Length: 164
Image (cartoon, rainbow, N blue to C red; front, top):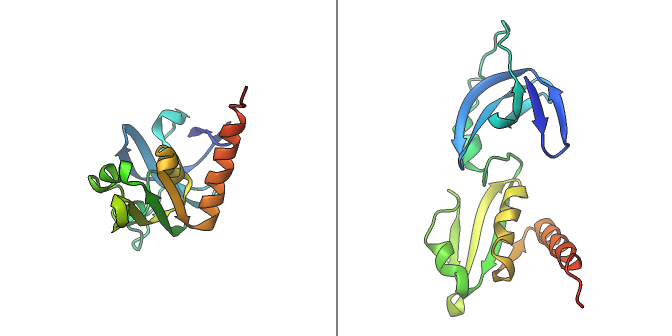
């Protein structure tokens, strides 16, 4: 297939052994073994511009549980599992409490109505976007790298809005 990778802004041919089609957040994804990266990858179907069926055969590894692999993801990205802890102010804590955001989540009630959200997620890129949508009502407590990433992003955003 020919696939456009958004993060690198490039189109490349890839040979992929398709394991599963997955519908998530209003989009379809292909999960499969990518020979180019020698890894299991997730591809957005709408970024596939050319697709050809080959006569190559493949087997899904018996010890691979795709659904289990997807469970730790906060969205569609895969990565090393990390525990994320985020403090939410009392102003938005009700929204956090009313929904299951991740299967591993745990909520810790704080004085004054605030809540700490804790979850073990695969990678932090997608949860970073989720946290940022809550603005100053959310503060990353852990991991330190995610906290630093959000600080950098917030500083860059503030620099885009210089004062008069």
